[in-house]
Image (tube, rainbow, N blue to C red):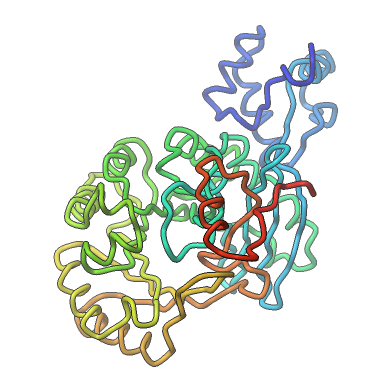
Length: 377
C-alpha cells in the first residue's frame, strides 16, 4: 500500500478511530490507547506504542500514519509569544501562536488557509483564500505546539491550558472539521480541555452559530467591530448577508441553551482611529448590546503592510472603555502580544496561494507591491 493511501490518524476523533480499528478486526478500545499515545504523548512512531501488540504495530505502520503540519519557522517574541509557520501542503502554510501568561497558556489556532470573508482591517484577509483545513491540520497545530513547548525551559511556559480558534480563517465556514477537532481537544484521552477553555471566534455566520449551539458547547466570541450596519458593512462584509440584528438574535439563542459553557458572549472590537472609536460609537455600542449577556474586548489595531487603518491612541481607547464600563459592561482592553513577530491579533498571514484572485486585484492597484509568496520553506 502506498504512503499516500495511508490513513492519517490525526484526522480521526475517538468515535472514528474506534470505527477504524473495528474495520481492521481490532477491538475498539485500541482507539483509546492510540489517542493517548498520539495526543498526550506526542508519539507518531507506532513502534513506540508499547502497549500494542507487535503485530498490530506492524499493521499500523502499513496502513496508517500520524502526520501533522511541518514546522517551517519558529519565532519567539521578547514578551514570550511564540509563532510557528506550519506547512500544510506543497504551496500553503498557516500560522499558529502560543501566548504564555502567569495563569494560562493560550494557543491561537487557524481553521483555514487564508480567509474568504475579506474583513478590511485583517492581514489574513489580505492574503486571499485557498481552502479549509482538515481535522488533522487543525488538531495537528495543537499536536505540534504541545511537542515544541515540551522542549522549553520552564514548566509554566509550556502548558496549553486554553485554545482559541482565532487564527487564520473563519471557523464556522469550516464547520464539520472544526467541530470534530474541538471534540479531540475536549476528549479526556487526548487534550482534556474544558469546554470553558475553548473559544471559537466568528465574524457572524448566523446559521452556523445556531448549528454550533446544537452540536458543540464552547465559549463564543463575535468579531463585531462596529455599532451599526453601515459601518460594519464596510469593515466586516459578511454583515451584508447577516446584519447586526440577526447576529445578536443568534447570540441570544446561543446563551439561552440549557447546557452552556459560558453565560456571556465575548464581543471583539478592534479600535481604529477616526473610524469606530468615538465616544458616540461607544454609546451606540452600549445601546446595541443591551439585553445581550456580554463581555467586550477592545483590541488595539495591529498594523500590517499597506493597510489604510491606524491604531486608536491610548486616550481614545480608555475613553471608549470607560463609557462601556459606566454603562455596566465588563470591558477589557486586550494587551497587544507578539507584534514584534507579527503574531498579534489580525496580523497572521501565513503563506496562501489565493484561489479567489483577490490578492492579484489588489496587487494590480498597488505599484511595486510584492507578489504573495508560496510556502517553499
